[in-house]
Length: 137
Image (cartoon, rainbow, N blue to C red; front, side):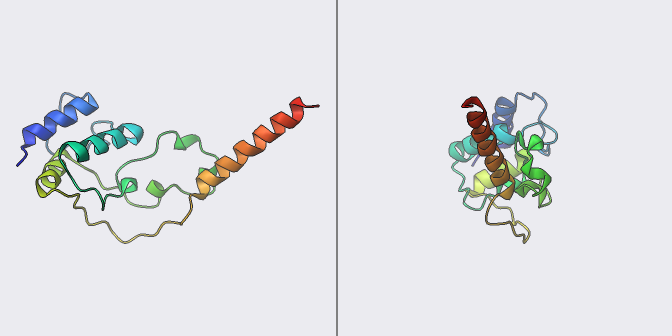
């Protein structure tokens, strides 16, 4: 069995925040989101042997760099389509001791493709092709 002290020390180490309580919202209170959140959750799962097969990232954190996405002006990212569910060190402890991520996510649907990203990729290809065409004149 893991202890809350173990989990809080892990969260402190990974976030760099010294004041961590059992009920701290890891994203909002401790400022851990995006790539940092992804690294934290991967190491948490590995270190505490938590089965993450039911984990849905977009309920818990934003994507870094997505705020300047042109595609986002037309299509919402997954995390913008659901209500965020905060994660706390106490939840980390409970799941570590159960051995599995155990959040009952609400019913929701997401598009099969990330059209926001597809638009961005098309624009990048267009601008590269235009730059190559312009330079070859």
